[in-house]
Length: 412
Image (cartoon, rainbow, N blue to C red):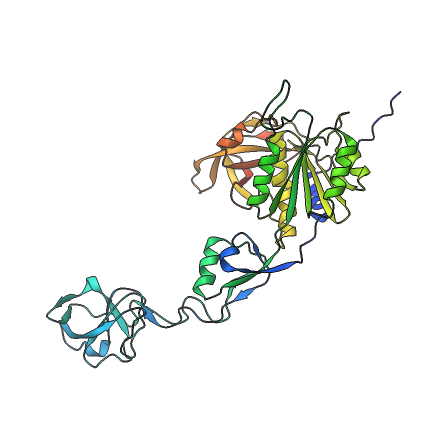
């Protein structure tokens, strides 16, 4: 008679997230990169402005620099005594009783206290005519008005985006201290997975590994293809043992449930791994496993593609955040309004793809639920704008209810 399998109770989602995050520690290895190579990396320390910006007081428009005290009569007429252009030599001082043609970004000559835009004057015979009195400081960008000396340009823990590259370049910063990218190895298990692009009878193509590699890369990792493994305990154990110490996180999909041909748990134990948590009260994706093999964290996701996708967003993204030195972003922290009604069976927190139909009268997104809850298909995700969730004890959603969601491209 076969002994009953000791199956642990389901872990609630919040506890599972804590367990997942606890398996990883922030990477301490730093690298000094050229600015052009820093995109997507995480800044290792606060970067401060070594100068105020703008560097000097300058004109905000193409026009004429002048002194208000010289506008004594109406209509106001001043001779144009020269030109000031950006990056070109210019008079140090504005001549008395005259204006200087000035271009956007050009330094303001000493003595000038306003700039009149080109379209606000009439120019003829070397003179400009104004039919109004400008305000002091008009169209002038004062030195330091954008950012003060010592301002934090990029806080520690910020993932460097194109706008950060531009800001640092504008400040003359050519190198950036960053945290080494997390190294994540992704592998799939399953005898049913076709190899070499040829699908035999009863086989399927592996969607999970390419998808998880793409998600890891998008999250800022060095994503390493770990290949596929058959549903055999011993070879998988050797593979996991070989990967331990070569990656910060090993991420698998498939073979982590209760079936007789699910090899992850026994292979993990044979490789010297310690399970920290298994089976989560979430749908899809109940058979998720967390643990460590030595210094390497391990997360085993289900084989169903939708469940693997959801598991990455629920758990792996937060693990990557912590590895990268960032505070993990909570999943689905944004509010939206349901444009659908749906009954939910209480017991597991459910995550599902949604499409944004617009906004309600308060500006909240209106969300349409996609798919029918089947975790083996990715088709609804191809039409989705994000993932929404309902609590484990919820009995469903009524049209107009507030719900929580995670838009794609925001926080993962």
